[in-house]
Length: 508
Picture 1 (cartoon, rainbow, N blue to C red):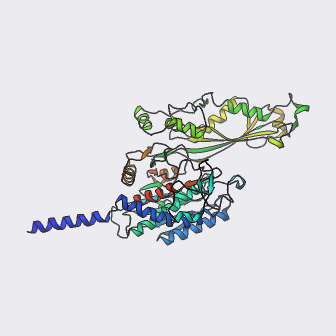
Picture 2 (picture 1 turned 90 degrees about the horizontal axis):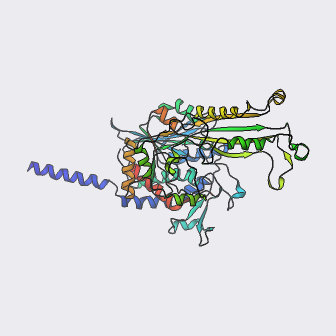
Picture 3 (picture 1 turned 60 degrees about the horizontal axis):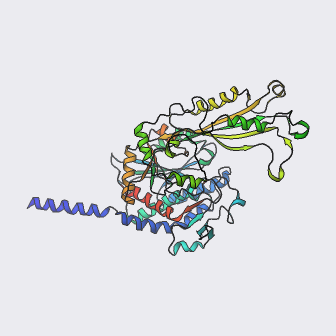
């Protein structure tokens, strides 16, 4: 009889516990409900300019985030830096045990600068709902239609929709959905908000060191970035780091008449072009000896990379190119190598402002994406040595009159290192847990990316706090981030709420 009672009690407890767990169908419905309810918050935050070059605008974003997280029972603390603060929000489980873990979540709130005249709407800071017609044109539709049965292919256009206020507000919506389910995570949450990511997060490494006790956690999850180009649920286990070089080649002291002094005065724009061209071969490979040193992909790593379902014809079509550079055997392999990219050039004038002048100088902005085997300072030194080997005398800024008279080729170099790369194994605890979450939420294994091509300022957390990090990208890959007419697909926003809710309801 006693045995029968115990069995019945065990079954009863099991049924109750099972009932408390949210089914995927429950999560989908509640996530959609709160995604729709959050559109007002999303529009409000998008309406706040967030270019980190303007601290007074950033302050309004900080205050908005403080209020939003306080409303959801988080305590907030400003982690002050020499420029604008980071914001830390924290919420602990009510009845912790000795095994209770802490998850640190990274959100980016700032955005890229804008050129309002290039946007196809009144303002980049006035979020606008649009629908694509049969001719492929995006037409404005009423905001209120979001509440009348939205189309997942509609898009909201504004700066930072995808990069990265969309994921931030989707996370807030997932917290509201969690409250609606009357559930709590079984782990403590810390949320760190970065307001200078688009400036390279220059204060972040020092801040992580200074506030490492406040930031202490067992793992880091990054809610940022675009999904795989197929727009399927994705996990990314690493990202490249980044460093920058400004290279200026000098010519005459001031612009010279191209008729009076052409064929006599060296043209710095031509010389800069020749110098840059000498850094790569016709296949796009960097020619600097040792640039790819240390990058060795094993057969197992290549096999894993081949499992990513890239359609390279579609990628080329998306980019509008006939043939890619030949670094690695495929798209995923190319991302495992460091890059040397010319991101901008400037000298004199073009178009209707062009003049018959020989420029006084020509400048190129270069970025180098870093992989785990790359050392930023070593790669910068390789670029510097290459320039010296081409006969250039290197100065820090402007050459002196004496230097102009002594050296036939003069260049100035300034460089900086924003942050390093990071990489977390697929079979890490964090990776296994998140893979389980995504599989349950979407009914299939997520696409797993070994290394994202882009850069996010995560390595200071990984190195200083000694924790693994995995990115959970949710936005549409064709979102125009950093460019004009940035947007987020409504279906991706709803999926982001579902993704984050699934993470919040999964035991750790």
